[in-house]
Amino acid sequence: MKKDVLRAQFEKHGFSVSFFDSGKEAARYLAENIQGTSVAIGGSVTVQEMGLFPLLKEHNEVFWHWDVPGRETLKKARTAKIYVTGANAVSETGEIVNIDGTGNRTSQMLYGPEKLYVLVGSNKICPDLESAVWRARNVAAPKNAARLGVKTPCVAAGRCLDCDSPERICHSMVITARPGNGMQAELVFIGEELGY
Ligand code: SF4
Image 1 (cartoon, rainbow, N blue to C red):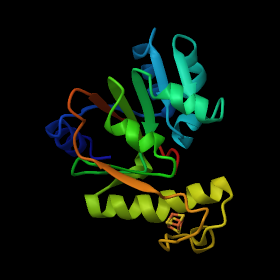
Image 2: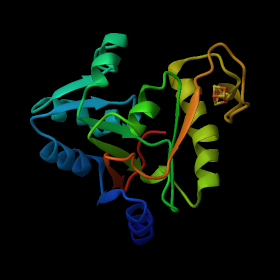
Image 3: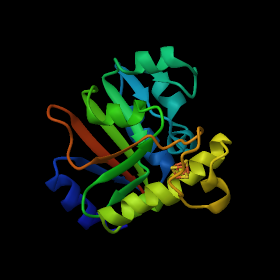
């Protein structure tokens, strides 16, 4: 991981950054720094693999639709002061790329919470924006489609075919180049592979 490059590029774009060797260490840091507030979590295999949800729940009100499924949880999540999500890809030039079906994750990365935390395993880092968009489309989305058990062509092909399937999971793709006005945003880089 090119820590100096990532720090320089993301700080230049107005993000703060932190680095950890493992998901466990990053989860401890987040649990120590997020206390006594409301937190929403986007759908994230990274969060799941880090075991973050139970730690955050000890000292916060946490809304996660992977814990309590349904639109009511998504609605409550929109009121949370803190938003935690994974990235589908980030670029060494300082951008975050996320694809979403419902739009809860992509929209809250743009506006709503006071602070956004984006968790980034080492497998998500790409040299530039073009390769980050390619990764989000051709690596993260097909793997998510397979996890969700939908019948989209990417599941068999292992790459995106820009389908018109009724079960298509890719409805929005957001490139976050800088935090929204008035929002703080931190990239939490983790030196191991996490999520898709
Ligand atoms: S657009 Fe369709 S084929 Fe492409 S990754 Fe999304 S679901 Fe798969």
